[in-house]
Figure 1 (tube, helix red, strand yellow):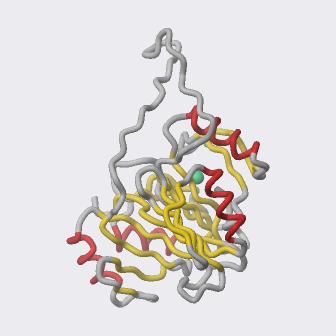
Figure 2 (tube, rainbow, N blue to C red):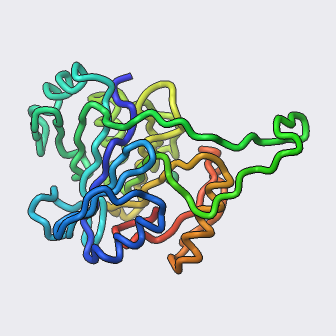
Amino acid sequence: MDVSGIDEITYGADDLPVCRTFFLDWGLQLVEEDASRLVFESLNGCRVIVRRSDDAALPPAIEPGPTLREVVWGVTSADVVERFRQVVRDLPGAVDEGGRVGCTDPNGLAIRFQVSRKRDVEVECAQMNTWSDKPRMNRRSPAYERAAPIEVGHVVFFVKDVAACERFYCERFGFVPSDRYPGRGAFLRCATEGGHHDIFLLQTPDAKVGLNHVAFTVRDIHEVFGGGLHIARQGHETQLGPGRHPISSAYFWYFRNPAGGLI
Ligand SMILES: [Fe+2]
């Protein structure tokens, strides 16, 4: 395995105070803050950064308005960074910042690779009883007042050419297809073994380009509900959910994100 998951994402947004409130409600920790940026962390140290859309430090946007501007993928060793340094060298938007190298993907998104800075975390997760198997006897399931997301689990983009994007991630950086809507959608994971997908690329008939959503991973289904109810109580708008995806088996609750797309 070369790429282990998402280490950091950066949004470009219009209203930083609103984004600050939103991500605190979402359950992230605010670890740095100044006039130009907000830096949040999830439980395992995955970073979510928000800057102003017109910040010159940001890579170009793939769509108008607030959106995701950069995805930093964590890799397993400095050897992988070195190998990817050679891969990106001649690609559009190539950057080499020492410990972090990157380029622009075929959809126009800035991607970067660094040795993962995420921490191992121990969290207690609910045991699930079924009709045939009951590991939790005479004990309540956990109930969450609000969520504390463990990490960014995956990102989803509308892309103009799903086949080109799939080739780019798989052939150059070792991603593996896990599922497909033939001709319109590709679910890719970082490595052969892993969660269902780390990135999902979706091509619509009008070839729209943009961010669809960023997904955060929580401990168990109870935290999906506890977290979602908290976000709804704070007045944030549900787009869809709660629900369950037929393909990935994931339980979800989508909200509108003031920093861009759905979350
Ligand atoms: Fe998702």
